[in-house]
Amino acid sequence: MNEQTHTIRNSDEKLFDAVVNLLAALILLAVLYPLLFIVSASFSDPALVLNGEVLLLAEAYYFRGI
Image 1 (cartoon, rainbow, N blue to C red):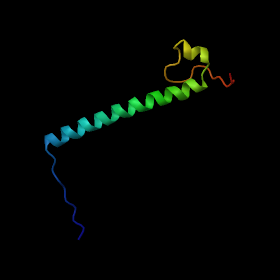
Image 2: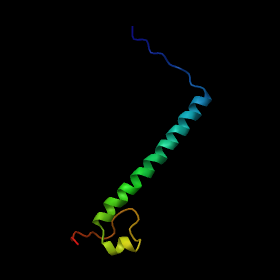
Image 3: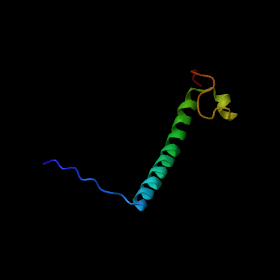
Image 4: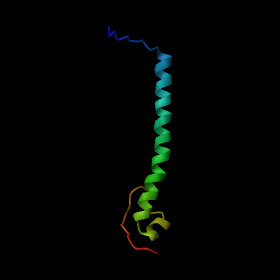
């Protein structure tokens, strides 16, 4: 009753899947990096952010308001 059918994928389909997965990973990085940077910059010292010293993670945490 529950027969599993296995389809054999040719090399073109495998290549297409690899390209789609690579593009999806690049788009994911393009979305996540700015989001993580904004969150890090929100908790970092404003002087460090303005000097470009915060690249990915917060260097020195800063919780004061303006």
